[in-house]
Image 1 (cartoon, each protein chain N blue to C red):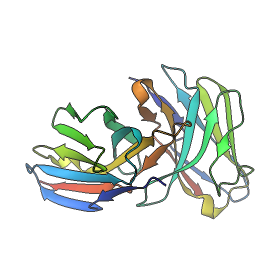
Image 2 (cartoon, one colour):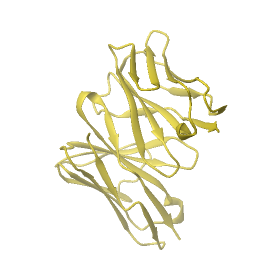
Image 3 (tube, rainbow over the protein chains, first blue to last red):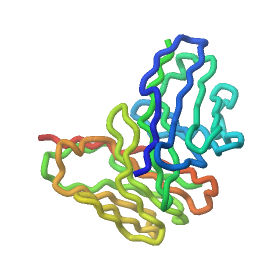
Image 4 (cartoon, rainbow over the protein chains, first blue to last red):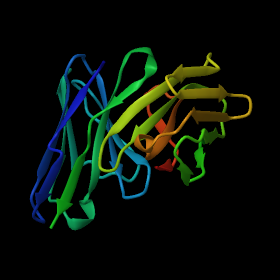
Length: 114
Length: 114
């Protein structure tokens, strides 16, 4: 089946630094990638939608200058958390649409900012 | 505005019991509905996808139904096992949603006791 590989699975960074999270579609081409954030015991919150070769569309309240999304190819989308702060600590998950309207998700990245 | 609600938020059952998880939505104009499983600290695993024109889907011990007129979907798990313990999320894609965004419920945390 369609697989999205997400890396890293866990990352700890210092306040003020930037962190890049990668999502690769392994056996299909993902023209659209969705980026979610999840707080403990809560559901997924959509942050942005990225389309290959164009600018990402951010949801209301999401800072586009803090969460940089790049979708340069049909198999790779990246999320960069810039100038990270402890409140950015969260679980980040990417997702891509697959055949018949379904969706496949990456395994998630646990970001801890210290 | 489409809203998705899952009840109960948490459920604990003894092994072997049949159980039903509920998902309700406010707008019947949906494109499809998908049930996911999420283990702690992990990404989402797709369980069943129901298209708007379908009434139910089955996979092994799982059966998902869809009733658009009443705004409900149920996930039936037969003969539950401890390995079924996880959080179950329903998510739908609204018909007017050209961007393909999913709207998630809050999830039901299931615990199956040996």
